Image (tube, rainbow, N blue to C red):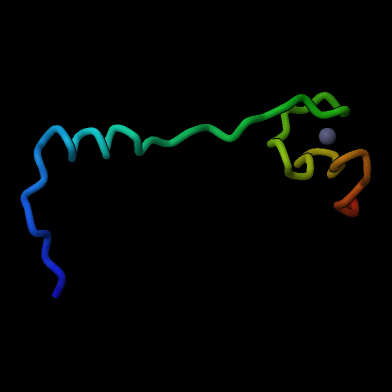
Length: 57
Ligand SMILES: [Zn+2]
């Protein structure tokens, strides 16, 4: 089994963990007025890039 050759310093471990964080997906205001996630079809009207991608029930 692979083993680390040297013990990693506390600073180095902390620095790596400091770069791991959750980010909120970037949003934009859709043409229908709702806040939608970028690069995804709007959850309210289903329009993406000016086209209707989700058929209404
Ligand atoms: Zn919309």
